Image (cartoon, rainbow, N blue to C red; front, side, top):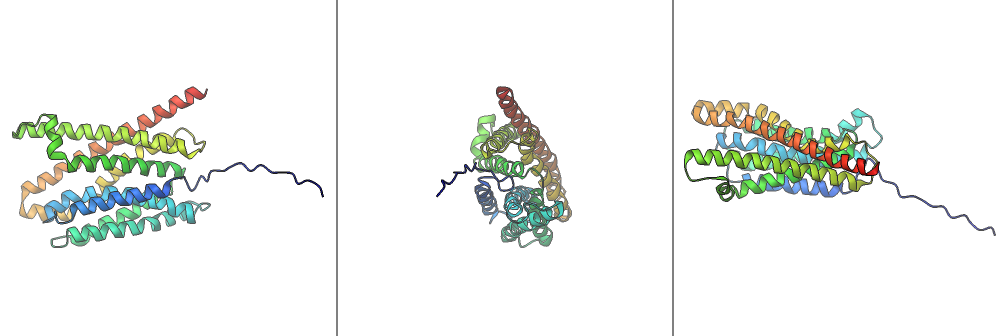
Length: 289
C-alpha cells in the first residue's frame, strides 16, 4: 500500500461568526437586566419615566446589536443586505420584548405607557439591524465596547452620591451643579477611552486581517448607539413630555435639558472611542512596517 500523504489543514477564522460574540451578547443582556432592575420600583410617574427612558434604550440597542450579530452569523452569513437586515432585526426583537416587559413592570400606571413600551421594543429591533453592517466583527467589537462604556456609566450612577464629592461638591446648589458637570465630563471621557481600548483588543484577538477603518468604526459604535438612544428616547418620549408639561412646566424643562447632555455624552464617546482605537491600530501598523 502506498503511503498516504498527510495534509496540513490551516485553522480558519469565520469572519461572520467572530469569536467571543456569545459572551458579548451574554454580558450585554446582563447589563440590560441590571438597568431594568435598577428602574424597578423607582419610576413613580411620567416625569421620572421620561428621564429613565433614554437610559433603558441605550443598553437595549447594545444588547440588540450583540444578539443580532449571533443571528446574522448563524442564519445569514452569505445573505445579501436584505437578508442580513431581516435576521438582524429578528435577532434584536426578543431583546426589545425583554426590555419592554421590564419597562412595563417599572412604569405601568401613568400616561403614555404604550408609547414607552413600543419605544424600547423598537430599540431592540433597531439594535439588531446594526448587525447587518460589514465587517460584522466590528459590530461585535462595538457591542463589547458599548457594554464596557455603559457598565462604567452604570457604576458611576450607582455610586454618584459618593463620587460627586470628589469633584468639589460642597452641599451648595452651585457647587453641586459644577461637581455634577465635572463628573459627567470625566465619565464620558473615561467611558470613551475604555470603549476604544475594548474595541481594539477585541478585533486584534479575532485574528482577522481587517482594514484599519474597522477599528475606529468599532470604537465609535458605542457613541453612535448612545446618540441613537437619545434620538429614539426623545421621539418615543414626546407623549410623556407633553403629559408632564400639562402638570409641571418645571419638570418639563428638566426633561428637555437632558437631551443636550445625552448628545454631548454620545459625541464624546464617538470621538474618544474612534480616535483611541485608530491610534492603537496605527501603532501596530507602524510596528509591522
